[in-house]
Image 1: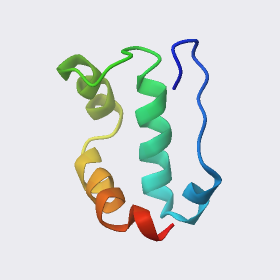
Image 2 (image 1 turned 135 degrees about the vertical axis):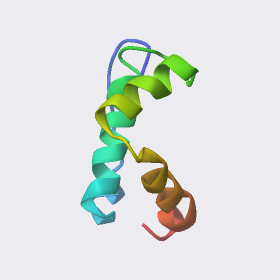
Image 3 (image 1 turned 120 degrees about the vertical axis):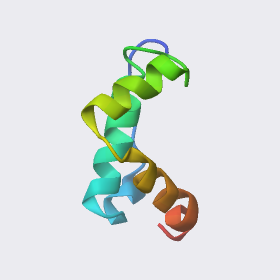
Length: 66
């Protein structure tokens, strides 16, 4: 997410499991509310997607394979 509010997603995310893609989209959309990774930012993510940590972990482990 850019400072002007543009969200760009890489096409290779289409190869990720759908819940992971949803997490990435939510992650970027949450930046429309908080343009950082502060506790307030993560609270927005957690409110919409409890358990987001599993999807982030999947990306860290498997993201390079996309």
